[in-house]
Amino acid sequence: MGIYDTLSALGQKFGNAKSELNAGAIHITNLKPQIDALFAQIAALEADKALLTAQLSTATANISVLEAEILVLNNQIAQLQADLIAKQAELDEALANVGDPELQAEFDAFKAMIRTRYGELALIPWPFDGWAWDESHAGTPLDLTGYVETFRDDFTSMATIGRKDANPATVKWFAAARSSFGDASLGLQPGDYYDPFSIVDDPAATDGKALRIRMIKLDATTTPPNPPNTNQWKGGLIQSVNELGEGWSQGGGVFEVRFKCPSGINMTTVPTCNGAWPAPLWLLTNDKKNPVEDTRMEFDCIEAYGSDPEGFHAGVHYKPAGVLAPGAFPNRTNNPNYVGLDKVKNLYAGDGSLLFGANPAGNLFNGQYWTITTKFGDAPGDLTQVFVNGKEVQRAPTLSWFLNKVYMIVNLTRFGTDTNPITPQDLYIDYVRALAKS
Image (cartoon, rainbow, N blue to C red; front, side, top):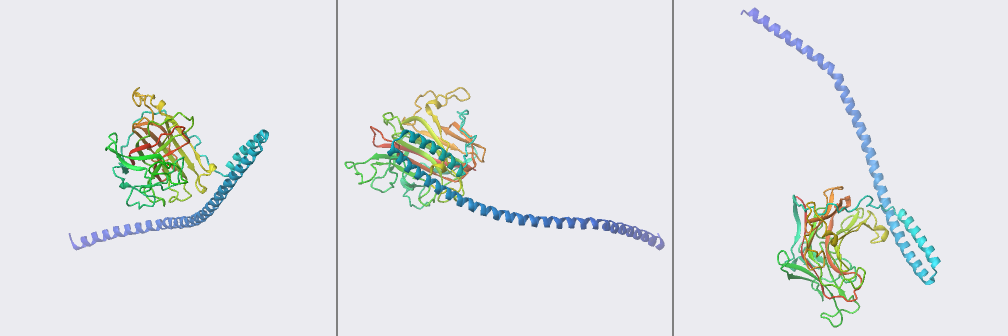
């Protein structure tokens, strides 16, 4: 090929390249308005975003103000409720002195009206509408697949139990870290003149040892003698946080206790809830650590009454967010459930077998160990289940406040008056443990 031909070919390539560049320039020129339009849209969206951000900031500030105002109103309402309860007590006393049946009837109607009205005034929600325990799945086996232990005490040593002001880094339990309730003093701690706590040998315990909480009646002749002007009955209580609310707590998960109630108690002399009142495991929201805005609860995994030895009692107590007055009746609602073990022992599982075999000793005070497990759902609406000896006895939907952090309490006290009480009375705890999803 000659030089002329080579130059001619290069000229042709140059011409083609120039045509492609011209086409590209035309395409870019066509794209520019589209790009400009997109930039304009982005600018408009940024402006909308800035406006919405400002509106959200204003709304958040308004919500904070409203929440503060609601908290103030709730506290004022709680005080009014307490005042009203006190006034009702005064009226009751005055009415008792008058002794007029017609006036009594009128006053009863008036009190019913007041309760209705100030229940509405308090704006206290009833959280259990449509919520109930369901026993139709009795016998479903406990499944802890995917759970790991987060707390466990096998009670082989008293070293895990401290006084109410103990350092939570050194012990798992704190004695007498809350006020007494029931008809026995719960204010005794390890090292006091009477110590209700001890580790004892028990071949029926999983490791041969158990915590014994001994409730005893002291008088001037006992050793030790009862201090003057104090309750003669002494029980015991331990919990997993100290008096400052420091210690172990957990939201949701699984809580389990293996226990043996006092046995041989005279449980029929008085037809009321009298005698021993063991609560081998119950859960309480940590009021000293959780903000008052949290909904608080007490979940009784198991409590038993000497007057109802075949009864399994579980209860959910609810206290609305923002209400400070402790224990005022209108501020605490509950949904207790009662399952008679006399009935549970005769329930049949899906395969037709008896849940607890043919043994008729469905009695919490029969001198045998029982294992109670409470398994909360992972989220609101999931199942919360209660198990006896690894078999379900009841279930219900998980409410959102079931998942707030709670600490554990174990205690033995009394409820009512026995005509022929036995002393001492012992509650044995083999172990307490908690689990959570791994």
